[in-house]
Length: 80
Image (cartoon, rainbow, N blue to C red; front, side):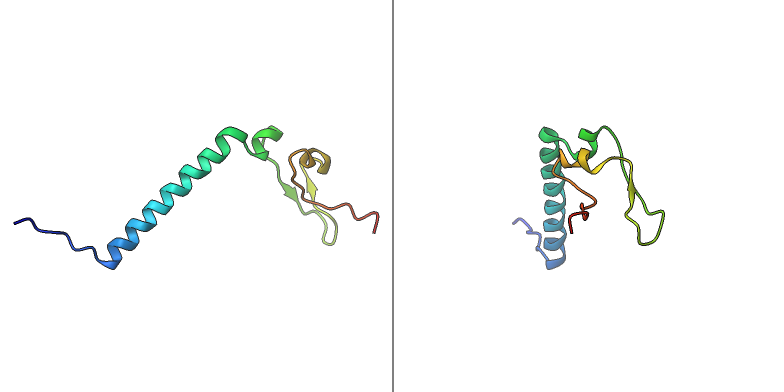
């Protein structure tokens, strides 16, 4: 007679967690494989520098460059 392994709630939880984790990794790789992401398309890393309190941050790239990729870090408020 074969012994069956009893599936406890803890083992079921760990199994579902592992499946979700690896599925998320696979989906992210599939998503970025064909289209790339903003960092790759813009040609490198970029970031923000908060130099003065109350002033807009200074970025390594322009808002116009990021607009090509439907991304932004600052909004034009001159028309307000």
